[in-house]
Length: 120
Length: 83
Image (tube, rainbow over all chains, first blue to last red; front, side, top):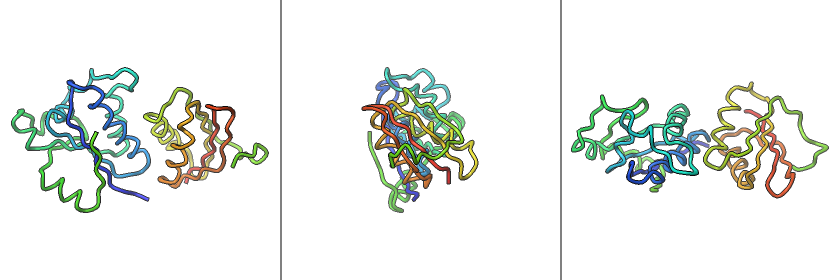
């Protein structure tokens, strides 16, 4: 029973809880053999860049870095919104392993194919 | 699913005390990945929400939940067979 799940994240260091929880949920999904994607938009795109998330840790939560690494190791995908990345000067060479820049059309096509979306 | 007399012998045991819904099923996934198909993993938890999470994880992944034993209000032992 495999489904496609997109968890949407819009925050970075400004809100460690909102930065971390999408990856926790997505990692649970990936650990349950679901096709899981974290979609990063607005300031959330910074999470896809090297080193940015390394120091983010909300009390009571596992460190974001650990969750992101586990998520990717479990087959999860990290998508950074191209429209949001470009004005922030973020390119493919800035991204961590497992992350890539995607277009709006790509996201829409994925959702239209039956992926469920969750915004946190 | 809760008769101690019928508990399957475990090939491996995971002490998941302290794990929450954020970490429990990923931890099980990591542990069971190292077992052979058909092996039985006993998972010991102290989070009551595991009684919801582990059956759901079992249904999603196809790793069969053979039995569970509620030791008290919080502690539960689960027996999962790797598919």
